[in-house]
Image (cartoon, rainbow, N blue to C red):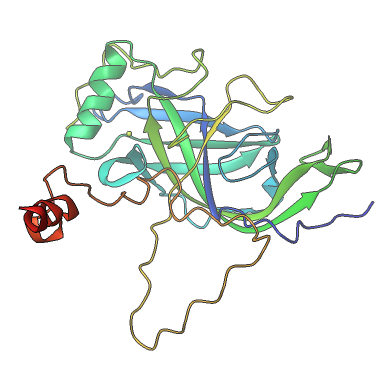
Length: 266
């Protein structure tokens, strides 16, 4: 079997996807910090913003550099919620467990909303290191499954963060808050699952801030190619580049050709 990489497509270097989530009180009555547990990824196909074809992440190439991964709300580093205590690949799935440990308004909102029955979901953000493209007519075995092309295989990636989100497409995924848990001081555009995915896996995209171009020693911009390759999104699931401001105020008299013509005819 031959595996090829798409030579013209620029793919995102970060991504995230939504997964099932549950929140419950800690077992020790003296420790009232709520806990969560999730099946983050089951090894199947996903639809991810920026990838033109379905995506499968090779769990053997997913790096988990630390066990205390930050847990946030809506992928914002300013909206801290807690941290993981254990992240591992078990039986072909990515499992994460942790605590809603932050003393923030966002953490309290997650807990109170969950106690009120709000269906929180989780979104996992990862940085892509290496990806392969499997063309139409070929297949590949990943995570002990065989997938037909065209698909993208993320061979290497690093898990970066986990977020609570409210915009999952699967209504069956939800967070459960134990009734006795104390109130403690957790895409992205969401895409539809690819055929063959688990029903509770929806994908979003994790942003990477765009870096403004340097003005020092800048080189002339080369002329555009006749068939340029698709550009990688400057930001993923972040606000797009803002359009220029447009004013409704009338132009000054010296810039208004009609006013100039009237003066000449007077």
